[in-house]
Length: 218
Image 1 (cartoon, rainbow, N blue to C red):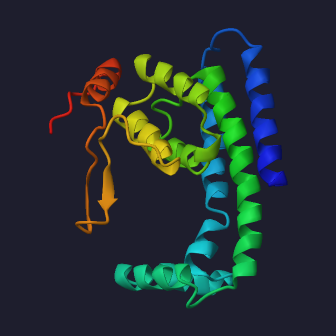
Image 2: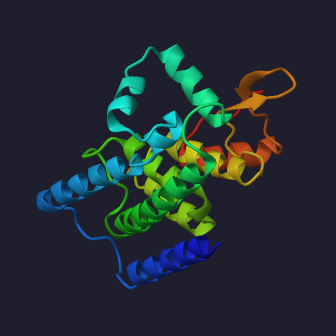
Image 3: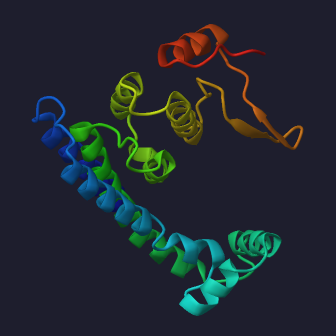
């Protein structure tokens, strides 16, 4: 609980600092190269302990061997780790999540600051590498931050589809209905994945139109 409170405080502090700087700064080649390297390092840190948690293994050599196995073997291993049948103890998992959580929060604070200061990274880094870091901090992705991201869509710096995926993913994490309804969700009744049906088709189509997506068709 103390960690989450500290993370929220640091996030608000970063927003306040960025808010003091009017407008967006131009992205020169030097700045672009520097930001690219920084965000790529964030991506490495984003996976610092996640591989160990997914495969339930701390030894680097054994972890590498597990990651080189056939896909079905890897999926079976991760499933058994998730169910607590194999791998590291729950206490070890909890400790690793504390470390990874601290990294994630630091990444998000810095990355959200970059986006507000220079705009969403465009062309010089793969979009999914940025959104992955953001989504690993979905509890910190506030409505105000999505306003910033929506402005980036309208400015042509972020694709409408990627924005909509992030938006609906965060809403799902908060147990709220999707708005854009473009991502598949697991249906426990049919035991299959399908696109969610809008609660309010009119609101969904309005939201889609605002960011340049096609109308939803039932």
